[in-house]
Amino acid sequence: MRWPGVALAGGIAALFLIVSLRVVMQGGPLLGLAIRLVALNGVLALSVAAAMTPFLAGIRTVFGRPFLTVHHLFAVVGLGAVFLHPTLVTFRVGDLAVLIPSFASWTVFWTYGGRIALVLIPVALVAVLLRKRYPASWRPFHMLMYATLLLVVVHANLIGTDLSDPVVWIVVNGAFVVVIGAFVVKRWRRRKKG
Image (tube, rainbow, N blue to C red; front, side, top):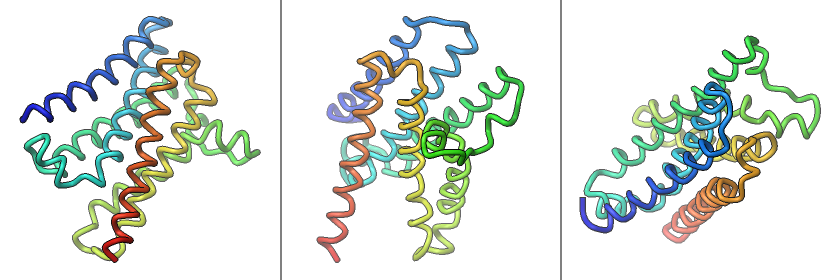
């Protein structure tokens, strides 16, 4: 890995470390701590994976690895953590009802948006697996990951206990702002080419 790659990887690792340390410093029961850690680190990993999508050639140059290798590393870690979070919550509560999406009201929809994200993620993943078979139509389904991230970040802001920490709030929401910026850059470049 080249020096810029080491610096970028170090910066990304620092974000995970900062958030994790802040969560651990707030303390709490071990299971609750695990639930919070996997949620926040999962959101960060998915944000990093999404934010790098406009920079295919740059990722290879900086990290010395193919874009998909780096992108999928963060995506797999993020998805694993995002699925582990509700699994641990279900274990703690002892009721599978916590996984069922609710449309009782606009507020409830956003507060528990993570439940809807759990429905969207498999659709986005299947799209990736079918991208070679359906090269013209897989991308819109995979873009559901952006909606997933929005739902998860709003969910975290509304009921995530650690988002009351200003440092955690800045890192998590800042990462999502970078994702939005990357999304805009990617669309702008596509329009410019087309």
